[in-house]
Image (cartoon, rainbow, N blue to C red):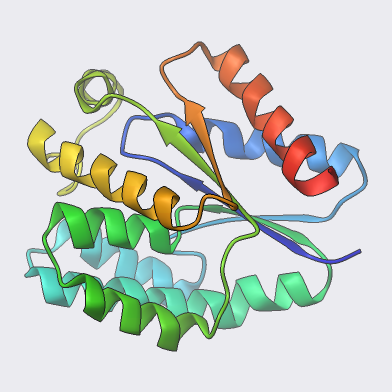
Length: 204
């Protein structure tokens, strides 16, 4: 069996993280070995960089470079080895988030992001990306009820509108690997759609 790389994407408050562990459980029940991880993060170094990205004041270029530095370590230590062993990797965000947040949200140069993507990933891309799409105003209301905000979650709705546009652009550029999930639906319906996408894209 070959390894599969599946990413969960969406703006803060869309509920994507809620569905990672249930997806992992279902895949393990089906006999697969699953690695659950996240970005930024997934290794000791990347988690330290994550804390800086989420909480330290910095400009957009510094933020972008830290995200890709974390990604480089994450790929080398976790993602690529797991895929080589034939495992399924479920990752809470990957490079689509960098284009959406740093590129569209922060206004960083998309050409620079493209060069960093090519150098850091060396051709690695997800086999399937589940994009949990939700109206930014609804997502903001969910976040307000859930937790204290980090420096991204504290951004205004206009920022998340730009981020959502970034996800739309990434999906338009790679429609074969994206599945849009309507995250405004109830949890059970979202879970059903996730399971359906896995069957269609990975087993079909």
